[in-house]
Length: 323
Image (tube, rainbow, N blue to C red; front, side, top):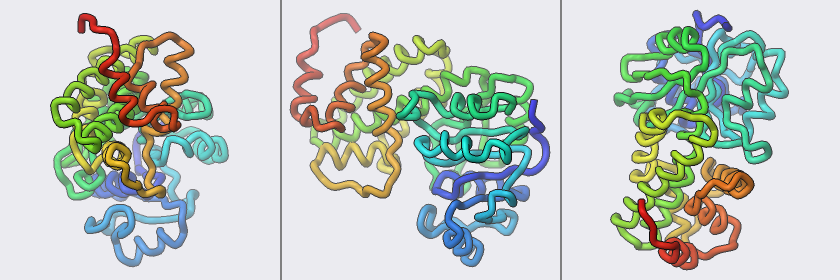
């Protein structure tokens, strides 16, 4: 087991990484930014004006663009899912022997792996965990109460990490079901896009509720095939995160769906993890014979194979059956 005592660092100074550093700033925490100019601006202004405006960084948050200065026994990797594999592959020696906690939500498009598997494959000897659940960066950064799931296959390490990473406004619940936790965080993003499309296209709240319920059924089916526990999906990292991301415009995936449903443009510079996840999961579901009609339709819409109207008609044309 890696050492989980001592300092903590956050790799990735996007909105969520910055928010986590703020939440953990009751002790010294290092925040690593890839961009040296962004790091310098944060040091000078004590604010991440681009990603998390209005939230002040306490003096206990040390901002750096030098990865060597951010090495710590416990490292939270708060970076987009599609960049995670290359990041750790390029830095295996630097990251060796540390507890690595993935804060990404999604599936690697190239391989279909979740964040924990990406880390474990690159560093088999590392203590690997996943931090996920219903949370918005703005809420965490402002110190609003938030509960998350911390998943670690090694329960003793998970308990130590639970204590190391809990903070006054950040309550962590632990589980050994890593697959369930990471799948909940990935799958709900796809359903959030569908929910956003529903509202953006003017289909109403009742239709959104139906999408959430049927989407949750898809989440359970896929997770069961992957050996995840149903109770994990019923918790914070599954149902809790699904409800949050399908009902709030703070969710990037939901906002993306809103724009898509309304036929409006969306900021191309904003990471929308559900896009790559929908494509990866639709491909896997087809290959393995898993019934995931909503996911398949979202992937088809994203690829231009279906229009919004065609997708809606396809949903209501499905055979009538028992729930």
